Amino acid sequence: MPRVNRSEICDPEQIQVFHLINRCVRKTFLCGKDRKSGRDYSHRKEWIRQRLEELAGIFAIEILGFAVLSNHLHVVVRTRPDLAKQWSHDEISVRWWHLFPQRRKSDGSPAQPTEEELNAIRKNTSGLNEKKQRLADISWFMRCLAEPIARRGNKDDNVTGRFWAGRFKAQVLLDEIAIAACMAYVDLNPIRAGVATTPETSDFTSVKERIQDRQSAQELTSPEEKDLQTEHGKKAGWLSPIALEPGTKEIRKTPNARRASNKGCLFMTLEQYLLLLDWTGRQMKKGKLGHVPQEFAPILERLDCDAESWMLYVRDFRRVFRNEAGKAENRKAFRSQRNRNRAQAVTA
Image (cartoon, rainbow, N blue to C red; front, top):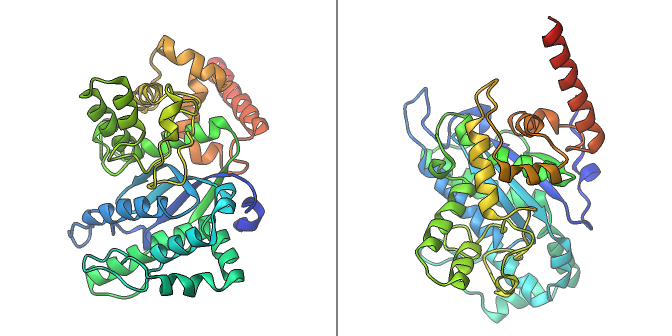
């Protein structure tokens, strides 16, 4: 089946959420321990994580979740063309300079641009409008993520050629349950792959960074300081906050240059998300479905989802949400098929 054109699912004028996947060429372990050569390339995972954080502070794209594995990466993003429209020509010029700097410091980071260098970008008004669109575009986002990693990886190996396999995959997420299930699917990916046993030990994932900030916040005494550390922490402060409605609304008014905005992404608090994720991770074994804690019932009810459906959504996310990203009619068909399978099992 031919791939859907991106123009058919991406609307440059609308806020959208996407699940993005990029794989290493031939599915080789170019970011982990290569089974054939025995070489360990795990240090490249930190390159990808650092680049994601850099791009979060440049693009009008919010990163809701990520996971970097040995041969592929997952990123959940939300485009914000509404924010890009508010940017002045000066702000667009500065962001574009940091994305494609003409000068760098000794450590490789972008040098501070001069007025002459910024004017060279500003003077082309039509070019600025194009750059503004690109700064809210997932294709440009993934290009600016993949290309530097590919060049750095090839230099590391002293080779040329492809590092990433073809174009990245983009899956649009149309509703709350699709977003929640996708974020859980991504955060639990290392557990599914058998490289981690718990969310807090899942290296190079968004959930681990959120947990680290939460742990640091527990050491503080003031509720305001705890909220500030949780929402704008050193580790996950570049990621979109979890709760759509924070406990302290003032905390969202604190500017954060590390991300496009302070807008949350889920209908639950960080604490609830971590508890739900922990419970979900414990049910990953086939055929196992333990008792759903009472506090999760309201969350699943708001999703119009029972516990078994939630587990199937997370465990088989790519299959269930493949075509229409979780539209209600597809989930209804999925539940009907599940019920038929149950009936057949009973009568067999």
